[in-house]
Amino acid sequence: ASLRPPPFARPMADGDAPAASRRPPDTPFRQQKLKAWRPILTPAWVIGTFTAVGIVFLPIGAVCLLASQSVVEVISQPYDEACCVKNCGSDDPDRVDLNPCNLKITVPETMQPPIHMYYMLQGFYQNHRRYVKSRSDRQLRGETGLTPSQLTDCVPRAYADADGPDSLSNVINPCGLIAASVFNDTFKLRTTDGEPVSLTKAGIAWRSDVEDKFANSKETGTNFAPFAGQDCSPGSGYCAEDEDFIVWMRTAGLPTFRKLYRTIHTELPAGDYVISVTNGVSEPGKDAPVNPSTGRAQRTLYPVHPFGGHKFVILTTTSWIGGEKNFPRY
Image 1 (spheres, one colour):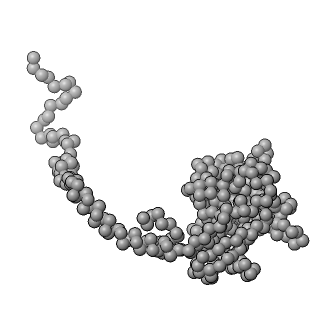
Image 2 (spheres, rainbow, N blue to C red):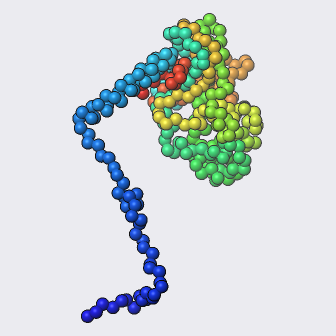
Image 3 (spheres, rainbow, N blue to C red):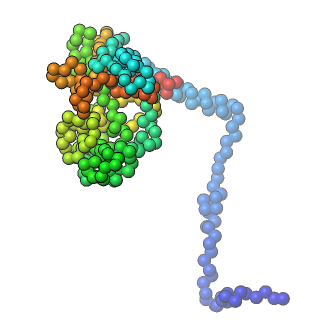
C-alpha cells in the first residue's frame, strides 16, 4: 500500500519557502565541539604544582604572621565569675554581683594607638534563626504608626501586654529579642593610681548603620525598659541612635564573639590597669547604681550565667591585616 500524507498536510506549492529548521547552527560553540585540554595529573606534575604554589605563598604567610605577632592583645579574666559574690549558681535567681566590680588587667608591653576595647561573650547564640529575625528594621529606621500586629517578626516581644489591644500604647519600641537582650554593662579604665584613661565612643558603629538604618521616632522607648530615663527624641543620639545599641543590633555569626566598645587614642604604657564594670545608673546619695526602670539598686551585672556563658574585656591593637589571628597565616 502506498503511503499517504496526513489529511492536515498541505502539499508544497511552487514558490513556497521551505519550513524554518529548528536545528542549531553548525558552529563549534552551538554544537558543543569546542576544543578542550584535559591535563593528565601525574605525580610529578602534582608535586611540582604544589611546590610552586607553596614557594609563592610562603613569603606572603611570613609577612602576615609577623604583622599578626606585632599586635598586642590583653584579655581579662571571665568577670562573670570574678564579680559574683553570692548565689553564683547557673540557675540561681537570687544572684548578687559586685556592682561596680573592679578588674585588674596587665598590659605586657606598650600599646600604641589606636587601641580598641571590646567586650566578648561566650556561649551566646546570636546566630539562632529565630533570634536573628526578631527585629523590625522599619521601626529601627524611625518609621511611626506601627502597631504590634504589624511587627510579626518580633512576636512575642511586640506586645507589652499579650492580652492588650493592638495599639501604639501597647507596642514595644524597639521590639524583638535582639533589642530586649541588649548588652548594658559599662566599662571605665584607669591606672592603679586612679588616673582615668580617655575612652572614645564616636565611630564604634558602622557609618552606614548610624546614618541610614537607625533613627529615633516619637514612639521610640515605648514600653522598653533599657531606654528608661533617656531622651529618645529624634536626633538626640540616645536610644535607637546610640552607637552601643547599634553595635549590639548587628548580630554575630558565632557563639563566641566580641563587639567594639570604645577606642583609646593615647598610648598605654606597660603596667597594671583597673577596669571598672558597672550596670545601672549612678544617682547622688546612693551607694550603688540603680536600675532606671525600677528605681531600685541593681544587684547583678549583665546576666550570662543562666545559659552558662562568660564575659570578658579585651584591649587590643591592630595591624594592617587586622587583629591577632595566627591560624589564617599558617
